[in-house]
Length: 82
Image (cartoon, rainbow, N blue to C red; front, top):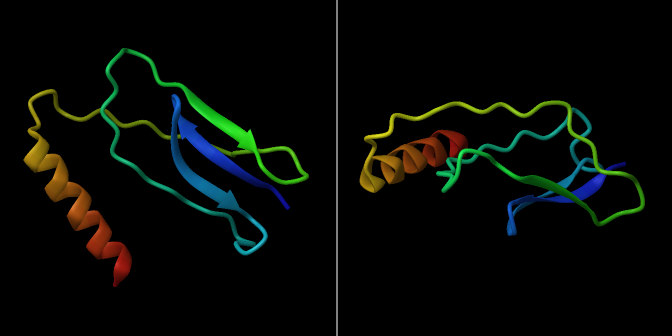
């Protein structure tokens, strides 16, 4: 089963290990790019090749403050914990 790390640019984001997630794994992040493009890297850490089935990108309003983004992240985290 695939096991690999996901990086956004040079920064580690999350480890994907599908051995324990037979129905797949979903990860979400709020990321503010400094450029008009995004580098998403799949780094092989197991014996199989990394694979993903989809990547969804959604634009955020340009005028969001860091406090608003933190509130969105906190709300998302709390809904995932319940």
